[in-house]
Length: 501
Ligand SMILES: Nc1ncnc2c1ncn2[C@@H]1O[C@H](COP(=O)(O)OP(=O)(O)O)[C@@H](O)[C@H]1O
Ligand SMILES: [Mg+2]
Image (cartoon, rainbow, N blue to C red; front, side):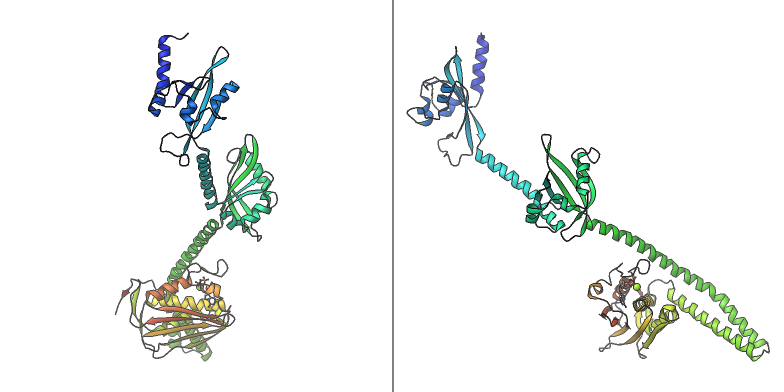
């Protein structure tokens, strides 16, 4: 038996709950109700027939839960939208009420039925929530930048997002209708992936993390991929696998480019130290060459020699002088000065460059035509840099002609008389369109490794630009290439170099 105090608290608890709660007799009369229900209805409902009050029906309907409880002796859970507020209408009501009706027995017989109502989201709303969650999930998967491919355990594709389409070249329809997940891999790779997925060693059981693998595109191309994958379980059963495919092409390209750049920088550094070294060597050669010239002259003047000996000594003198000239030009060429802009004769700069180059084996079978304007005005240039410009273009031409052909160097004045025009043409193979648009880019080269740094023309371009000039190229495949440089007579400082009048 319950104590009075226990009964009192039970009653208080029922009253404290803010849920509709009432008890009805087997003839559907409301026997008791909690405070909340009373407040909700605004009047005392005890003693009223529940079907009249709640449904405005004369007798309980067929689906009346209390009737069902009385019939079955069991609790009944029913869902029934009700008007909680007078002004509410069924159609705009978002929440429905669940009614839990249960029997209260008194010695095996139902004495009364207790009815408890509580709110639950309506089915439509739950469906709407589910739909929203599903479409969010679908959008997430579809818009993922990584390819997302899911397949069931037979290999049939279940999910194939836009990025997967882009990576693989298959349309989503093709993939979903007729592809097998194994079609994306070479040989036994798919099986190997499943083996790794099932193992504990690659990111946990059912998971595979950051696995680099090749996939086969529709057109047969091989694409390097970083794969993150997992098995989808239902209970203990494997039902599907899902993989996130990250295309590594761009990453690997950048990595390769970086490595190439490092090698090229190293090469460029080597070239520049070689330049410095040869300037040093040239300098050191100057003194002994001076000695050879001097003492040969002494021999010629001081001794009464036979003609043949004199001829030999003259020959020595000539050769030594040639050496001295070479050294002088080399020194002039590689002179380490700060960028200094002065008035210079570009014909001389071109001739100097040719002088250094023409005796090299590469130039032996190249005919050289110089059409240098005699009236070429002096131009404000950093002659050091101009030497580099001519050297690079001429060397490229000789390399393109592979040592055989015709090299034409010309200078002149533009029609308006404001610019000096330098043209360097070769009869090499020409530059195809897809190459020509890149030739001024740093590190762009079509030459094999070790032969080209791809820095020459980019340097040329920036030097010409620094001088306020313009460089253009015209090329015809199979006929040859012409580089044209226009330099303004008035120096326009673009590169922060000093100008000395
Ligand atoms: N006269 C030319 N004829 C044909 N191709 C040329 C010529 N000059 C330059 N090129 C192309 O331009 C590319 C870039 O030249 P450059 O910047 O000097 O670098 P590199 O000579 O180290 O390759 C060359 O690799 C070559 O493909
Ligand atoms: Mg070059």
